[in-house]
Image 1: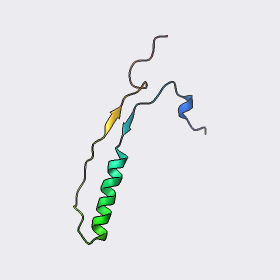
Image 2: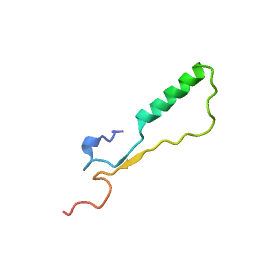
Image 3: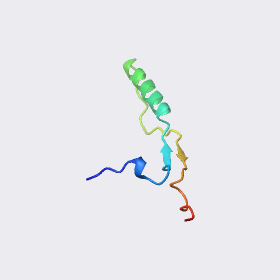
Length: 63
């Protein structure tokens, strides 16, 4: 089986910026709190993310 690579695609793909820097910061702060003996807050933490619209989203170019 051959893997699909972005070089074979017609244009840049639309993607989601998951804000990994903020995710890492939250994880690090949680870990430091736990190591320091503080309890972690239970539940789900929602961090902002954004849709990065590129050429793969929309109608194809006229041809």
